[in-house]
Image (cartoon, rainbow, N blue to C red; front, side):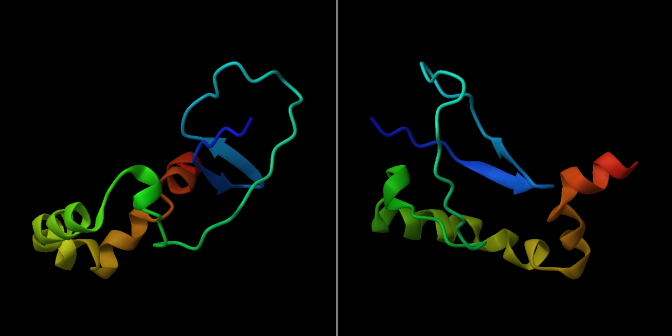
Length: 83
């Protein structure tokens, strides 16, 4: 049986977005690193038309997201932990 759970690699550890159900401790795992910005939307149940609609709705925020000042949020958790 395969179980897929997303997570973030940070500080030599993988932080899972959710806890797996019915998976015993010491179960072997395979971790696949994906590049930033490369998300398989179809695997998340989002088709091409839905993706285009989302992109059009979120375009108004792109200028703010891409501004240099927003880069502080790229590693927000690591930054917060240093405070």
